[in-house]
Length: 530
Ligand SMILES: Cc1cc2nc3c(=O)[nH]c(=O)nc-3n(C[C@H](O)[C@H](O)[C@H](O)COP(=O)(O)OP(=O)(O)OC[C@H]3O[C@@H](n4cnc5c(N)ncnc54)[C@H](O)[C@@H]3O)c2cc1C
Image (cartoon, rainbow, N blue to C red; front, side, top):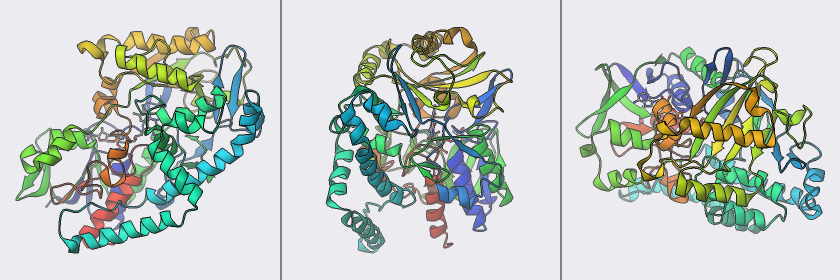
């Protein structure tokens, strides 16, 4: 036996899982395909002298327990809050600024009634976020096919979650039902009448979720984006100094300190199975590493369709994995800027330069973008969120210059009519820049370097199937006990000794660390360690 546990993939969840296992005294090896660890949470130079978080770009969901257990701050992580949460240019005269003390007055610019409603909305959504927070580090009860003996612990788990729900006030239970069943659009329409506030809040319902904001299920995705916090401030979003790579570098340091062997440029091509048990992995260089346990940080489709021989898996399971829905409709750009953008509606520099700048003035605009993408591959009026992290972090760009992340939603994961993203990358990148330029004239001229990642590029570079930033849609049929497949929502694969520790398990995508944390707990349980 070469090692106790081999982890396939050095994304943030693989690193977190490795840390906890090594802390419990196990010998752990992490094998990462790329030259650096971190998966979708990495900082790289994309233009000479300009660095940025290449994929994920803003932090909130990272679990406080995990930050503390791994002592990430002691390992160099510093997270700062945005000075303003969101800025939404409406046209060349009007905007909505959300997050400062003046938020109510800002919303009241468009509707007095909405300004008055805002506090009640936040109170109610916060109560729902609390329910989710309680479940983040919980292993979902598993739906068992085995007899009553195996089912008992799962029943207890269900009972304790059921009790938590039963303790909620009736109004929260009703809200919870609405959030799971309804669309973000319908939910927000029931609260507000003006477009800008609905657009700012509803954007969370379609982030990494290829759907119209009026499609059922989007209200849950909205909730998924509000359970986080920054330095103890709930619901806030912030920036990791040095970019998202600072998080994963700190995680790697913490793991190495516990003795984890992290190897890069080490792609796994096969999970070896003997007598129904995962016994080793084989790298693309042909090295076989034997282990008592194999854990996968990969999108479940990658694991089961590429690395495991289908003959070792039940036919129904294979069918479910084939139909596991991936493809968040994401187009991601990093741009090097000679100067800060000047928005026609607010040309002066200010706190809004640190905000998540949302270019999508209404829910209808987002719906249209989705419909266009379904029929054509992208919309002439796409959704862009721009963040300029160099306004909070001078380590990313040369003095006086800036870097911006363009997080563009709703391009088709696969283009219609057999077209390839390789033939449309630059055209769509031009469109995204032109879209910002419409609201901030001169932006296009300020771009001195750029990196554009289509869904295909996200798959090739990071192993994100269909470019899916979450490792699979956060739809009801792919959540909690059903993530990735009902019967395997407890981090255990259908093969003994094989576990899943990536975002394709509960609680899903985002830089949370939770899947890695929870999977480690289950592995330790099975190995008889606490
Ligand atoms: C464009 C984009 C924007 C996002 N924005 C945000 C954001 O702002 N905030 C946020 O919280 N979340 C964001 N997310 C989501 C978040 O980044 C991901 O959900 C999360 O990082 C996934 O972490 P993971 O550890 O589960 O998997 P991954 O990060 O995908 O890690 C899996 C690792 O496995 C490696 N691998 C793949 N195949 C093999 C193999 N055969 N052998 C060995 N290694 C292999 C990969 O290279 C990768 O390093 C974003 C994601 C993307 C793509």
